[in-house]
Image (cartoon, rainbow, N blue to C red):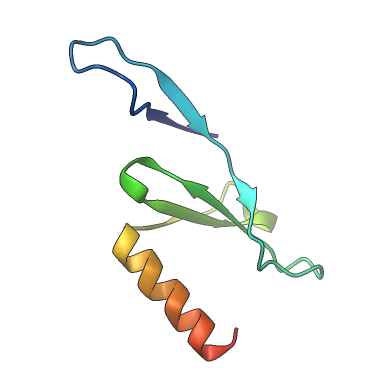
Length: 77
């Protein structure tokens, strides 16, 4: 679970944190080759391997994620 400051929090210190949960990508296969994604603050997208949840996490800026996703779609992957 990833915590982030709610967009409904105020700058005077009255903050609420909400959790962004990992979810299985809709493009994950049924053969164990799965990826999980989570939305982070400012549109950042995190990606991790379902089989290695304690392993590395890739973080993409909104623009980098759009470019990555477009290239994957274009390649038919």
